[in-house]
View 1 (cartoon, protein in one colour):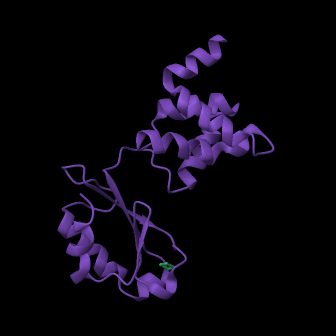
View 2 (view 1 turned 90 degrees about the vertical axis):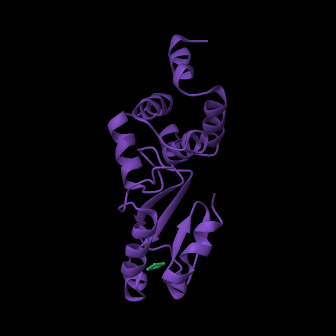
Length: 164
Ligand code: FES
């Protein structure tokens, strides 16, 4: 095994590398796997650290800056540690009209964190997100992979209770 691959394996697990390489086989070139590679590492680690980002960039043969731009643009990739569950509140037009501001204020108060923050027990991270394409069911939020629609401040306790 080459020294370059050895160095990658110090940062990325063999499993992560295998999963990324499997994604690359479906794509025209290695750089096209950028989002998939970031997602693979996030699935294993919960977020993408600078060290992981550099290793992914090396594996894909692209610059860390270019990969970081993609990671930063794609707001489902977390570049800072997050809690066990990530709540993403839609703040786009339909959800705004349907009261997402009040909902977000209620959530921040309930969780004791500002947007972007994580609760001290690491249970929840609260983040804003652009339209989730469920505007007809606004206001909407996503918790982990679950779309939660027609959310009201009164329903928050029951919703949050599903996620320990
Ligand atoms: S505006 Fe919130 S889901 Fe579209």
